[in-house]
Image (cartoon, rainbow, N blue to C red; front, side):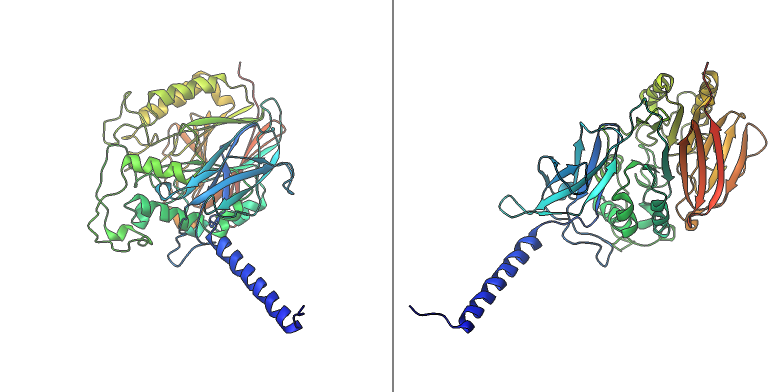
Length: 471
């Protein structure tokens, strides 16, 4: 028997190692990645939605896009960060049709429990899989428990404001409410679904948003700029605006003079938003965080009347079905505090030339004032507060000395607009700040506190309310 020389054995071993390295590179390079991280949302005491997007690369390319990749994925879920005793979802297939986003509706969870999850990813059934990093979320407490709560509110997001998420993350909120205008289609010359998906890759493929949403669940609301264009309704069909109204071209087609001269349709605007964020069955919904707070998230674009119609009792932003649901569920709630979050202001004030929202005299003020007066009649103003998106400045406004509305302002000072102050009348404004940043809302010891912060995390304004009994 011939015994191989040491040189021959070494050479054979190297060949085996090189083959294994090549095989691993081949298989793992084919597996999809999570170039936009993962996020959770629509949290209740016993359910959540986990969302991922399968990508070719680990991050953004030169045009800020993150190319998607077809493949398969499932979620592993555990109550400990070592991922022991995992619950595993079924496999889902990602495709180009929905820009490779996947959503997993997870139920039968425990209240007030942090869950850890990761994605198992593979290119196809015949290829090996690989595991992602670990993410997490915390479920809501039981509706009978008075637990301390702290959440944050943002709106009017810009690239300049993304570093604000690092400061927000340090506060360790229970969840985020993104109150609309998450991106600005019309500022980046978005005219198609593909270009809209690219803009979300640009804004939500950054370390700021990926790190924040990795362990903090969120509820996402849409408004005009992340639906179609400024002040859009289901009936308008404006041509693309002039170049001077844009920040820069999108990363897929930089030609401002291209033949396509239309924005997204009403249906496309709704469809894209439902794909890019964890989405409930209805765009308006309510959820509880213990006995302390119940929160309503309203839809302001899907059901509204034509903006140009004369104001009156038939003109509506909410539509009859949503409005009836809102009133009924507000009256049914036994939470210590009720918080109604609208993508546009109900009290305001707003700029005089606008006709887009409830704060506009030539817009939808009849519906807005009728709702505020109904709140007062039913004594809901004693423990119900309004939060608004859309406003490019921070404020605290009061209607008839009874109903309070808070605006979080834009995420960056770059997005701050001129600040209209109320004329003498039914609206008072204890705080009106030309500031970008965010707002936190805290429930503790049966009291509710609203705090405005600038984009550097410096406190700007604080207002607290004690729970009062509705008779």
